[in-house]
Image 1 (spheres, rainbow, N blue to C red):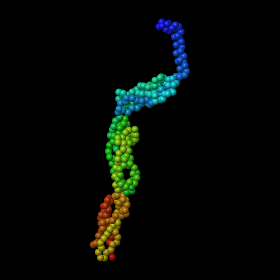
Image 2 (image 1 turned 90 degrees about the horizontal axis):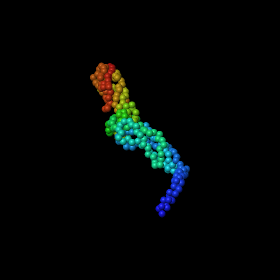
Image 3 (image 1 turned 45 degrees about the horizontal axis):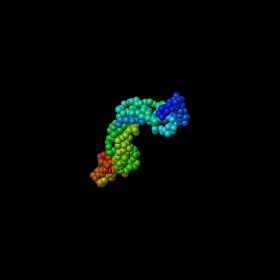
Length: 309
């Protein structure tokens, strides 16, 4: 039985082998006609793996194009996210590097072409640096009020980011806008990193990025010029009458809170007594200054003219 089977297999063996080869070729031809290989191009981002912590990484190539080939049936089910381009930064430290791109493609696909084989990578340390807080005030408080002080809860904050940017920062700036405020207030203010040229650098972290700032208001200070009114009292001796009273200077400058100055139209002098006066003359007399009001002229000269009846 076994001999008959062996003889059957060996009979016309070359013909049988040729028939098998022809069948395989025919099957390949049919399959290729029914499911031919096609090409496609996918654009994918370059991904970073194994990047060490504490560094800012920049690359000159952000995405690459992959030209691939696969049977049409496989291509029809493929998605762009099935293809990856990665660079491995394990073991690297601060500096500039050339990293080779490694590709990941689905099984059954052949990579024909890659737009970029390497990526130039720059790694820079991330650092924190303390800078002073500076709060600018714009707008105006209510009439008669001025800004007394502006106090942030912290005088310094940290700026965090790539070394070259952080080292250019000189302050963390914030802004408060006044709008006829009449009393002290506290508000939350956003802080922004500012370099030596006054430019805001927004791609850095300010820690904390916001803080409370208290604004204290005080009565507004001002100046004005007012007239001086000489004051006399007492009675002249018998046979004499008052011919006139003059004052020098006739006007003086005063300073003080705006709300105090608003109601002052003139200043009086301390009284000059006429009792016992028989001749005209001048007296240096002090001005009467309301509390909170000052003047560079502490005294004025009052002239008294006396005539006989």
